[in-house]
Image (cartoon, rainbow, N blue to C red):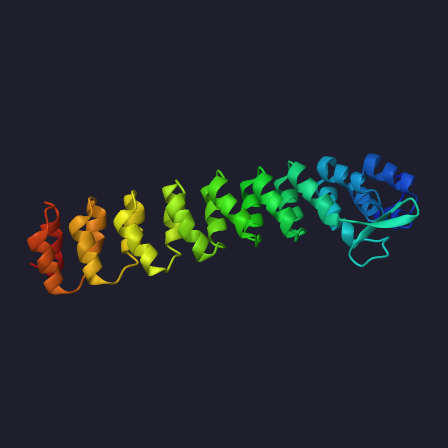
Length: 275
């Protein structure tokens, strides 16, 4: 196989005909030609060797090829590998192999490719929580179905990108919990934008301690009498201004003008009235 006089195509054809595992291991670990090592991977049966190559082979071509390992023969199961344990044949979970590769690889491209090969919700949940790669955590989060895992990610992930991805898949009942119970105003505000429960929105508009959240709640309210009360009572000019700008009734605007105790409000109301 190592003869320098053989063309690459001949070398790869020769490797393809080898099924002796010791010979294949020697090739994938020591052959200088990445294309030859790549061809040998297809017949490797040792999952630990596959993981080693995915993490350590100097060639991206070879590392990438390890992620197609479950699609290659020899196998008696469609799309799966198997190994012999005593007199039994045990199906190898290729996703287990890919999960370990993903969590340990220093190659961002390999991590992304490994993630594509994983569909098990439990594995995706672990990856979304433990991967050091923000992009991987974000993509894994977008495939998770379990609400408790998504809530945990929204609460604990250090990246707001990942937090908001989790929120995109959380039910409204849990979104309300996030807005009321979480501390990060940005996450709470993002969750509120997806809530349509009117009583919850109104309650937040009046009582939330963060003006950003109150402001977002105001933008979801259409009842002009409620908006009037907010315009008269809120301590933040941005919230009061947004409430006033959503009011179209002149009588209500004039009432605000008469009753307000905030020195900045009359100017906002007069501008709205065009006077």
